[in-house]
Length: 253
DNA sequence: AAATCAATCAACCGCACTGAC
DNA sequence: GGTCAGTGCGGTTGATTGATT
Image 1 (cartoon, rainbow, N blue to C red):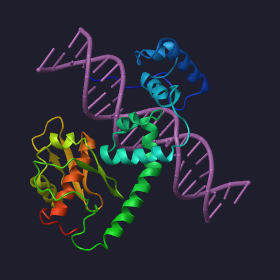
Image 2 (image 1 turned 30 degrees about the vertical axis):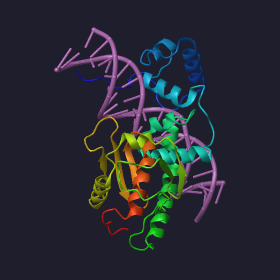
Image 3 (image 1 turned 90 degrees about the vertical axis):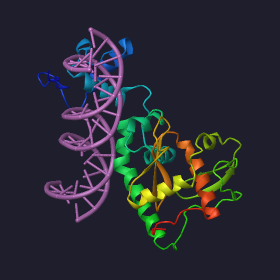
Image 4 (image 1 turned 90 degrees about the horizontal axis):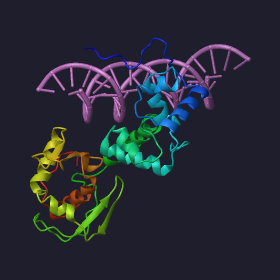
């Protein structure tokens, strides 16, 4: 059986919503809720399909919608989350109260994407002047510690443009992933040669993450879960860098 | 003032997922 | 396990608005 089209063309209105339609929808939802979007338009007396009603409500009429321009902080959050999550607009929207996935998607395509591309271009140009074996992150003041099995209780917080050393007494993430060792980094660098990403732990599982190596950002988590473990990655990365234990770096360094 | 171009954003489309049967 | 309806999500479209020529 073929699924019915989402919008019956016969007799149902499309296009921009009128103030009157908005009023009807708001009144109905505030009285009866929106348990069944498909049945809602008929019950509310709207000549719209349920999908259109849902979209109008979630993207425009919901009382908790925040209107107006995005703040600098919101834009930075979107850029950061998009870097980590990709086009998962609903997940990104969940981190920005009052903003819809549609709105975030629009602002990304109209403003932020261009800004990020520009920044990346500038950063890449700057990197081209770096000497061979350039390491993006400044080596931290960790004690030289090349044994992955006995990590120091420290972590670093790294952004695209800066690296700052901080101390932490909570390095549970590190202890949870003792496999992060020289072999891990080796696989990251090897994957880079073929433009691929590296999954970690390699066997999969709920906590698997995806890493990629780039001249711009160094080792980056590009997917998977537990982004906080990025600190852990930075920790080991800097340890191996400082200790000279990294495998030979690709030419792009 | 008119025409053209670019930017913006609301809305639509189709696919995927989920739960009920 | 298969089918279907309902819903959510991401990609895309197209109308509108503002800027530029």
